[in-house]
Image 1: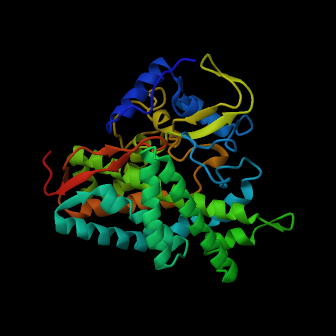
Image 2: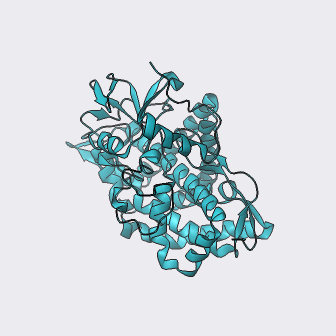
Image 3: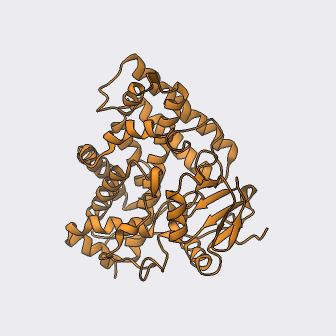
Length: 393
């Protein structure tokens, strides 16, 4: 078996995307020996097709590369239709645009408080000081967690993310179990004192009945555990990546400050350029041939959304930022098919408010060191040191 790329090699903030550009041209269906071996789809057409074809490409065997699910199955991502559907149906009404819009004042207040500390110091790390904390506070509010749980989630979530990025399997397992313990406590608390199902995710899951039966307790716990992690990591790395881009392009930052109505379109283009996932996985139930390469059944296949969204055959001048792309609907930033991100509206709101407040916090900012990139399964920024002050174009 050929070894077309090595995801374990050291990376810079830009190097992975440069490598994916090469692979799209030379080896669009790539194989790596890392983590026991896996395939990677680099082209938009192939990623979109595999994500949508859940009958052929299942997520229930392995949903991410590298495989980090040590402790049971976590709906909805670890289940295929129709098994995953009751879990999504419980969460979806709580994550509509209308529903999450009520969180805007909360998000804005959290962002301003975090940025005030950074401004007072003249700068800081966009990820460690800002974007890693904001989603935790927002999710805590959305999930009706108490302050003690918020503090524990903040610590465990950060440790889990760093462990996964560092391929520290021992700490990954340890923090994963901590997150499970938190999820079990939330479920126990809601069983004892339910909240309205249209206001609380855990209560909504506990109220679901399938053929008259409750959802399995461990599956509800797994769902809460899944929601905690997915909702914490992706916004953090995207905000970090956007900060890098704006520091490198102060003219764009100035334009967005002057024309705030452009922010929604800007967020969509940032999401295309800095799609945070490269390791969401599927497994083919039968042998498949893609772009002339034969993939045996039961081998993990990474859907490299980050590469697909820079595919030159779909997006003109794909490596550049453009506010006026006519085909933004083709972006795969939130996936495709039955596992398309159920929290997309909340993610968009978090990103928009976070970037707006970052731009308001000071006249400008510059990078104060090299940004540190994340590793598989995410792609983006793990650390972005910045210094506040008037940026020089």
